[in-house]
Image (cartoon, rainbow, N blue to C red; front, side, top):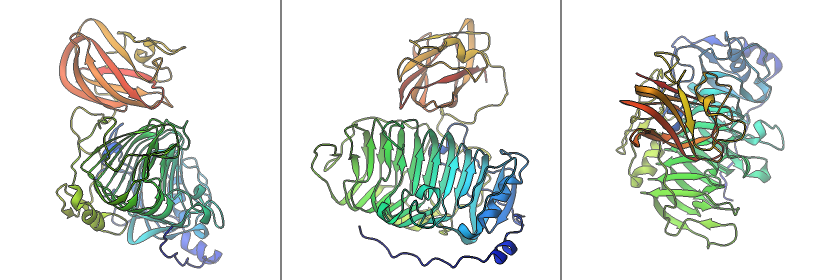
Length: 514
């Protein structure tokens, strides 16, 4: 594999210097929220706002980052951590507290929520130190570089992943970051951007992934299909062997990315995965789309891509390249609005916008980079209605309480009534990956908003919301969350699950008049 030169690492800090440097995370003089607003699937399921509305602190060491998390009133108290300088093993130790669960040798975002980490000043570099997100939600990471994280050799961190997410992770937006290694697995490195074990509603935007054997994965094995709803846009993948990304089950939306020197395989959709791949530019690469290294097929919808000096292998055995003339073999709908640049200008736009320390520039959808101002992300990016938006915490009477429920065949041990009992600890599941669940009343009700709450481990895919009285489709999309639509008077409303990567579990089917 062709590699860029390795970096010379800075000398380790002395203990005395470390102690002097640490102190505590200090409040920043110029408080800022994340720059811009989340896009893509990170806007679904209630949205991704990170630490908006909370305190802003400054940190120059990994220990100070952990201390900022641990000094919060609770594990969900919003906080923005502005990071400047080099974060490494020498200045990253475990900090204890009731609002955190940290570890030495890794930036640990575990069992927490509502956090923004953003590089400021002269930049933030996580050197040989990974960022681990586990059992966490509503996380934003912006404008940082993570480099040379190893799983073997010395020092090791985060299983060799630059950014890794696992175990019931929801709503993560990673934006304007640079993730890089200096080789592949034989040199001790693993993935740059990995998601596994029930990680959903993630967006990676305006970022650089380079000089690695593995770009990243969604699902750690053919049986790990509980992940998905991931958007990749305006990223540069350069000098990567494979996994740009590897998708096992689930849904990925991949648009306006620039791919250069992908050596073995690129977007690898397998094990039932479905990828919407549009307006990307692939150059000087091999087998950039298909199902590879498995007999368990994946699927793709393609439109507007440019393949510039791309070579394709012959189909044989476990390798099923989509080319040399890629055609769609599935259809994927996404529940949010987005604007795409034309594929021909993607390399230029991405070169000007992607990565850390690029001024947080973004595209305006017409091939023209622009610089946004700091924008509090108090609500998700506006999207085309109807679509999952923020989950209400009140604001009306749940009309499902006291109503009736029925549906299609149900899995053993579940009940239709579990979705209208007001108890998120119970759920209904269909007998397969698709099915109907309905709420019904003795007299007509006017409904304009529905909230679908998933049980833990669920993976609701595509759906339709149907007026059962006349079979009219009121809304369609994918993933759980809130759904708004034109006020409709009816006696029965049906949530129809038309596709999922695993077994869907509906904990609550809430209905509201407004």
